Image 1 (cartoon, rainbow, N blue to C red):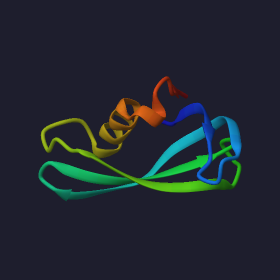
Image 2 (image 1 turned 90 degrees about the vertical axis):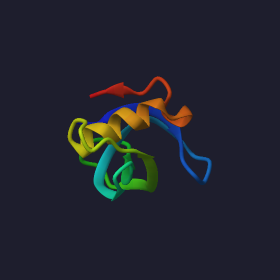
Image 3 (image 1 turned 45 degrees about the vertical axis):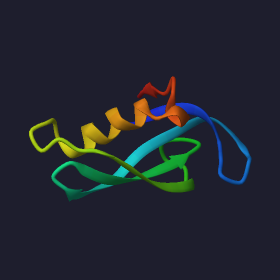
Image 4 (image 1 turned 60 degrees about the vertical axis):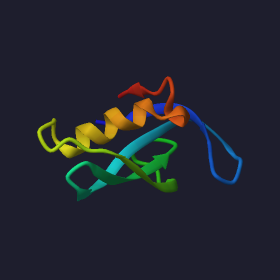
Length: 84
């Protein structure tokens, strides 16, 4: 599971068709978690950026990684990201 979207890196470089993958999810408590998000230009390319994003977590919900992707797609910077 991953996302794709045209992005602008933290240092302002255009990164069209970025491949966005959740690397790891850390559950911080019963209602929140943090995930590491890896950005690269392609599936096998080296990352150009790694971010950490916090999101609401549901203990009774789907697996943590799926919840992370669902949360990312609701964040403004990932608006219109496509599953790939």
